[in-house]
Image 1 (cartoon, rainbow over the protein chains, first blue to last red):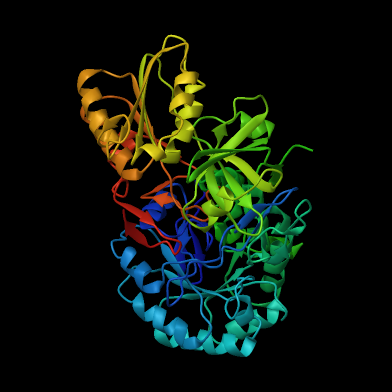
Image 2: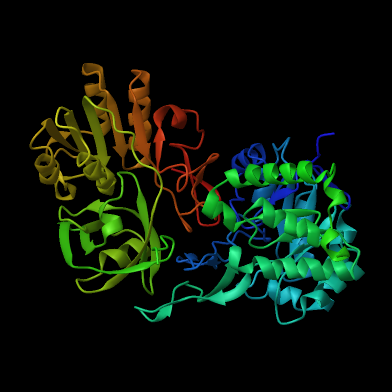
Length: 303
Length: 270
């Protein structure tokens, strides 16, 4: 039997395990359609806020010597209401809506705005490392995380994912708070707070000074987090952080991820990366004799 | 170590040319930027101010390149004000380039959209018959006319300037001249860069005659590398799929000529 790339993240079923990560390319339905045709199993929108945000002035992104990127785009987005209207015509694309806010009501207000949209899940951004009062600053407060997750759970029957990152609170405490409040899945991890300095002009390069490090340098760290979460909790996990090849994707699955997300690799390899990884996973499964993704999830923990 | 093209390279401005009261060309040395293809762009950092996408101008000296900027918003005004000896950061080049045909060629440029047109002129073949149209609002905004004639001195060519107010060259919009020319001449290739409405009309005029046409588009950009999505036009990303698109493709894109996105990603009318 030919291997199947279908995977389940709890109640969320995807045709393919490779998704577009939040913050990447996600502002137009036309682009979503293209990414879906290019092999993405689902696309996650940019993190949406209750009002449109311009984000930070440029420079907002910078390529690190030795690989990887540092960015502080600043969560620019058209706002939840505008975005909901934009995706109204969506028929085919499995869309996950990423939400960012400071208080539980921000999230419940936005969920309400998507009630007529075809959305397969919400991903709560508890981990953006470069914008004040949201993202990681929320994720660092497990009590606030509990309130937000409970509020969103009470607002919708659509599955909810918490995207966690490395902040000042141990991320496992954030994961724990989210699970306690009924979260359906965890995405791990976001970019890691970082800075780049230009030696000639002797100043930080990004306009926001601090940004988030992404790409291949953070992959082993993200992989460690997925391994730790899956070792400690019985919760579906989406692996994210520096994945650029099918081998990376398989590593995350073996560590306990049910699906993976791609971001920076698009900047390096463009959107062919989705099908390259899908095909690589398929060939690996064929070679190893697996028929379903599920058979491989977490296998590395048995050894 | 091989240079990481996504890592800003600091360059020193060596020469500044005032093209018009609002347009300047800043020249610097960089081997990679000196040899980019017409249509490609760089992300240009003005330390402490901003970073913006710029088509890479020719500098007519080996190993040198330039940026020709019109002061407009904070970023472009910041670049406009950079003095000789000051530093800018450059990353790239990014994007694709024009598919250069041979034979009768028509280049249509407006404002700083002339930059990739001038670079394109450095790639033409000796037997090409080249017409360059330069559109400007008024006489004091005309630039690169002498440069175009100079670059074409060994070719059969003509450089036609149009001004909206008739203070120099032919009176009228440059697209009026495009319409006239495509009715008279079966061009082998038409290339355009400049204001979107000008490119929209040029693409449609050329396409209506079945002529090969390409346009180099401009959009608000943050990353330049296909990550942020700011520069999307329909399903196309100007930074990765462009900046150069075939007219045939653009005609089927419902945003081209009508909408661009603001910093928040909301569609706005031209």
